[in-house]
Image (cartoon, rainbow, N blue to C red):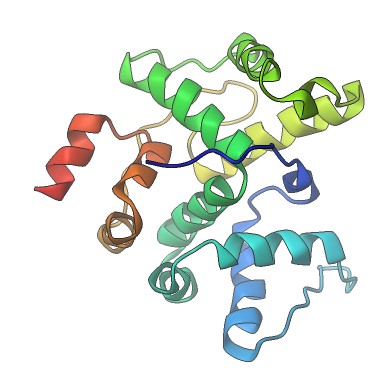
Length: 197
């Protein structure tokens, strides 16, 4: 079972998935212990470094190695997994809304789906209700951007949910960690059970 944090955090608004940047940071961080990231403009983004570190630290050692040494498709999947493991709001939205829609073959993700999800969560999460309108808009924008960059949806305009095909090594590393994490890649309970047999 994947446990929900008591409070949602919104620090992911500092950086969407940014797979290539995360892999560059991970290479220095995991191989040399260096915690810095220079953007294309040569500036260091401390918030992005902090978020990348949190995400990477939430991966298992095997998943970290795959992040460094896999193809881009596996890196993208592991970056998405790390974001879901780090940010429970993203994870809950993917499992409770995106996955459920996918499983009933409703592939059109809408703004209304997101708003309904947030309204339901506000009941038990005051931190959602207390966000400013500007922060709420940023949270929604970055969640949809992460879903687009992970290939979970086709783009932020259409928001069509996409079939996920996990790389064998990525799938194996998730099963070894906790098979429940396969849910963030939209697998049904039966598909997850089949993977375990």
